[in-house]
Length: 308
Length: 272
Image (cartoon, rainbow over all chains, first blue to last red; front, side):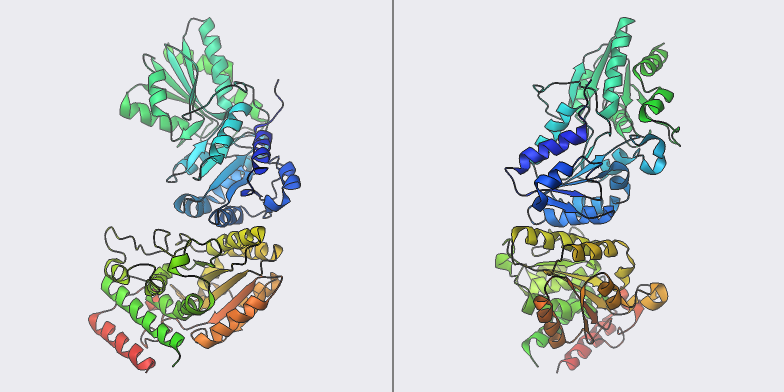
């Protein structure tokens, strides 16, 4: 069982890159510990910026640094980063096209029982609505590394959301990622389009369905915006049902975008495997996933019901 | 009359022209901030159209970005772009001169329009200079109405925390905002005391429409070490046009032909 978190992978990848590039900056809002960025602050103090508990300031200062040629990674809990500093992301990052990557840590319901203030179930919707803002929800540590390495090569705004706990390994060191989506499994009856923490349960649901004679494919749409439409449409050829899965509200995220894609390009039934539009039950992330049927068993059950 | 003050007249005349032709613009604030921008661009800052991408150029952000009309006048007059294009297209269909600052316009360093952003962005710019050991300075101009935005106070803390003595903020304190006096709407006074409490060096300019007084303040700011400087410039909204002066209605107003002619006459008389 993998114990390396995706936030740790982000730090390690930036540490490696910062040795070669002194323009790489990490900025935190009293979040270096929760963002696993302590090592970066210790090894590259001159490339580290602490702004205190001030997310609006975090994003604007990052944009100012970026406008002077820096490549800034602004790291803060996804819940605060995506909503408290939303206007700064809109104006100073997206509109000004600054070289800032917003890193939303402990995304979705990672903080579990801490409640709605600490949940980010509208970040995909919010960030995707900003012109030019790319949105990434990597599903495992190898993909996280590849995404950060890719973002280090360009100078455009992006938002990455990762979970708090370690994610199950779905790939390996050798996996090559390109185009923002990956076919994990091909299928003839149903296609899962998933991102982030929901990719693994969908993959396992597909295996369970296979045992019962239902052929299920899985696309890991780790770049939610812009979505790799071509790859998803191709993977969905012939299937009766598309199921979009995400750790997000039912509105404005991957489910909405997938439904939009199929309704406009190839009409097909699309269902959403999401969290509800309402208060989330008190408990850990995995307890809540269980409660809302976002486990391999729950997802397989739902799909069978839809196909019946 | 000295050249700098004469230039303030010229800039006021350009702004009146642009705003009249487009029937839009924030003329009241333009006329209060124009001397600050004139002094910074033509006396204090190390900037020119030729060096607009030089990493060592001084940086400027107009946080009260609705006064873009005035900044465009200053930049156009300095030759960053064809002034006629600005005069003839400001805020018109398909123009690149939108009503708030945008980096599509040569010389503009940051997009603006929503208040309470510029100070924090300028902290990032000044911090970048410190990281590199570059000697450029960063200037930002805010409105006093804008000082109700809480994000400014986050930025004030950060600027002091990082000892950004290469950062100079100016508050164009004209005492008015769209709904009335700042005192009535949301009193941000005493601003000098607030900046001081946040660890800033503060210079009060009692006549912020007087070029010489502004020059002295900015020169003094350059000599302050270890902390950022706030120049609190007491200005008059609508300065130079009698029917606009100290009148919140002219925060954003459209001149009739008669008012336009009167404004031009008054400006000419003021500097004669």
